Image 1 (tube, rainbow, N blue to C red):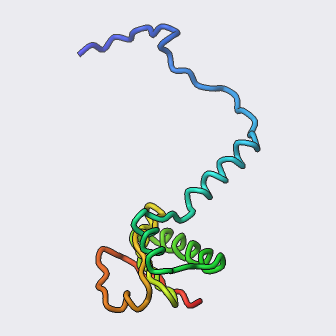
Image 2: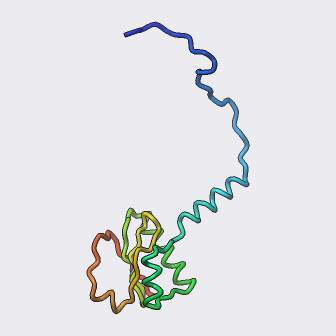
Image 3: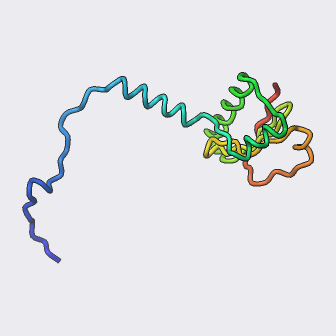
Length: 124
Protein backbone atom coordinates (compact mmCIF):
# COMPACT_ATOMS: atom_id res chain seq x y z
CA UNK A 1 0.00 0.00 0.00
CA UNK A 2 1.36 3.43 -0.97
CA UNK A 3 1.01 6.03 1.84
CA UNK A 4 2.75 8.89 0.03
CA UNK A 5 0.88 12.09 -0.76
CA UNK A 6 0.72 12.87 -4.45
CA UNK A 7 0.25 16.26 -6.03
CA UNK A 8 -2.93 16.47 -8.14
CA UNK A 9 -2.81 18.49 -11.33
CA UNK A 10 -5.14 21.50 -11.54
CA UNK A 11 -7.28 19.91 -14.26
CA UNK A 12 -8.06 16.90 -12.03
CA UNK A 13 -8.63 18.90 -8.86
CA UNK A 14 -12.11 19.01 -7.38
CA UNK A 15 -13.81 22.24 -8.33
CA UNK A 16 -16.11 23.58 -5.60
CA UNK A 17 -18.26 26.58 -6.49
CA UNK A 18 -17.64 29.49 -4.15
CA UNK A 19 -20.64 31.70 -4.85
CA UNK A 20 -24.35 31.14 -5.23
CA UNK A 21 -26.24 31.92 -8.38
CA UNK A 22 -29.38 34.03 -8.05
CA UNK A 23 -32.64 32.08 -8.23
CA UNK A 24 -34.25 32.32 -11.63
CA UNK A 25 -38.02 32.56 -11.18
CA UNK A 26 -38.54 31.46 -14.79
CA UNK A 27 -36.97 28.06 -14.08
CA UNK A 28 -38.73 27.76 -10.73
CA UNK A 29 -42.15 28.17 -12.33
CA UNK A 30 -41.15 25.73 -15.10
CA UNK A 31 -40.23 23.18 -12.44
CA UNK A 32 -43.61 23.63 -10.71
CA UNK A 33 -45.43 23.11 -14.02
CA UNK A 34 -43.42 19.96 -14.71
CA UNK A 35 -44.11 18.64 -11.22
CA UNK A 36 -47.85 19.30 -11.52
CA UNK A 37 -47.86 17.72 -15.00
CA UNK A 38 -46.26 14.58 -13.61
CA UNK A 39 -48.98 14.30 -10.99
CA UNK A 40 -51.82 14.38 -13.52
CA UNK A 41 -53.53 11.03 -14.06
CA UNK A 42 -53.06 9.39 -17.44
CA UNK A 43 -55.02 6.61 -19.09
CA UNK A 44 -53.43 3.43 -20.33
CA UNK A 45 -54.48 2.35 -23.81
CA UNK A 46 -56.49 -0.47 -22.23
CA UNK A 47 -58.31 1.90 -19.84
CA UNK A 48 -59.13 4.32 -22.68
CA UNK A 49 -60.66 1.47 -24.68
CA UNK A 50 -62.71 0.29 -21.69
CA UNK A 51 -64.04 3.79 -20.99
CA UNK A 52 -65.13 4.15 -24.62
CA UNK A 53 -66.63 0.65 -24.87
CA UNK A 54 -68.61 1.06 -21.66
CA UNK A 55 -69.60 4.70 -22.22
CA UNK A 56 -68.10 5.77 -18.90
CA UNK A 57 -67.62 9.51 -18.58
CA UNK A 58 -66.54 11.81 -15.78
CA UNK A 59 -67.21 15.52 -15.60
CA UNK A 60 -64.41 17.90 -14.69
CA UNK A 61 -65.39 18.09 -11.02
CA UNK A 62 -65.53 14.30 -10.67
CA UNK A 63 -62.16 13.89 -12.39
CA UNK A 64 -60.62 16.55 -10.14
CA UNK A 65 -61.89 14.70 -7.06
CA UNK A 66 -60.54 11.39 -8.34
CA UNK A 67 -57.14 12.94 -9.08
CA UNK A 68 -56.95 14.55 -5.63
CA UNK A 69 -57.85 11.31 -3.85
CA UNK A 70 -55.34 9.31 -5.89
CA UNK A 71 -52.61 11.82 -5.00
CA UNK A 72 -53.65 11.58 -1.34
CA UNK A 73 -53.45 7.77 -1.53
CA UNK A 74 -50.01 7.99 -3.12
CA UNK A 75 -48.81 10.20 -0.26
CA UNK A 76 -50.00 7.51 2.17
CA UNK A 77 -47.88 4.89 0.41
CA UNK A 78 -50.56 3.20 -1.68
CA UNK A 79 -49.15 2.03 -5.01
CA UNK A 80 -52.16 0.35 -6.64
CA UNK A 81 -55.68 1.45 -5.84
CA UNK A 82 -59.28 0.62 -6.64
CA UNK A 83 -61.28 3.83 -7.11
CA UNK A 84 -65.03 3.29 -6.76
CA UNK A 85 -67.45 6.04 -7.83
CA UNK A 86 -71.25 5.99 -8.15
CA UNK A 87 -71.08 4.87 -11.78
CA UNK A 88 -67.66 3.26 -12.29
CA UNK A 89 -64.69 1.45 -10.81
CA UNK A 90 -61.11 2.24 -11.84
CA UNK A 91 -57.91 0.40 -11.09
CA UNK A 92 -55.19 3.04 -10.75
CA UNK A 93 -51.44 2.71 -10.44
CA UNK A 94 -50.64 5.60 -8.11
CA UNK A 95 -46.96 4.84 -8.59
CA UNK A 96 -47.27 5.66 -12.32
CA UNK A 97 -50.28 8.02 -12.07
CA UNK A 98 -52.05 5.81 -14.61
CA UNK A 99 -55.58 4.47 -14.82
CA UNK A 100 -54.98 0.82 -15.70
CA UNK A 101 -58.56 -0.31 -16.37
CA UNK A 102 -62.15 0.85 -15.95
CA UNK A 103 -65.57 -0.77 -15.63
CA UNK A 104 -69.09 0.29 -14.77
CA UNK A 105 -70.39 -0.36 -11.25
CA UNK A 106 -72.63 -3.23 -12.32
CA UNK A 107 -69.70 -5.07 -13.86
CA UNK A 108 -67.49 -4.24 -10.87
CA UNK A 109 -69.81 -5.98 -8.40
CA UNK A 110 -69.11 -9.36 -9.98
CA UNK A 111 -65.32 -9.01 -10.12
CA UNK A 112 -62.49 -9.84 -7.76
CA UNK A 113 -59.76 -7.21 -7.63
CA UNK A 114 -56.24 -8.38 -6.92
CA UNK A 115 -52.87 -6.67 -6.61
CA UNK A 116 -54.29 -3.55 -5.01
CA UNK A 117 -53.25 -2.19 -1.64
CA UNK A 118 -55.83 0.55 -1.19
CA UNK A 119 -59.41 1.48 -2.04
CA UNK A 120 -60.86 4.95 -2.59
CA UNK A 121 -64.64 5.37 -2.33
CA UNK A 122 -66.05 8.51 -3.92
CA UNK A 123 -69.70 9.55 -3.67
CA UNK A 124 -70.52 11.98 -6.46
